[in-house]
View 1 (tube, rainbow, N blue to C red):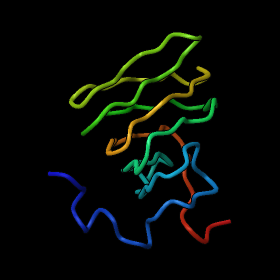
View 2 (view 1 turned 90 degrees about the vertical axis):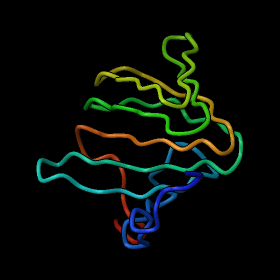
View 3 (view 1 turned 135 degrees about the horizontal axis):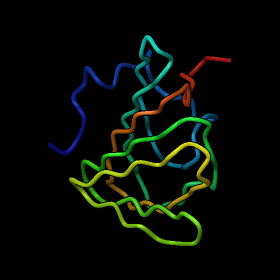
Length: 117
């Protein structure tokens, strides 16, 4: 597959660009009953993810392409089929190449939908 299925890209779940750390990326979010979230991201051009930190764990699975995590100055390439767990409180950023798709789970509320305040 070269894209997520249409039912996963319902516009009511589209993530606002204001709550993203990477430009030129499209994401959709789903909420868990416990306040956790899952997001499905597609990157449209090479870019960087701003350095940030969460007060909850973040799990990442690269479906296609590559995301290079940067943690404490260390570059960690995460390629298609690979996963990574970023523990809460760890400052991180990254670099991503166009065409990359990821599925991420957050132990807390990370993303806001378009129109959410």
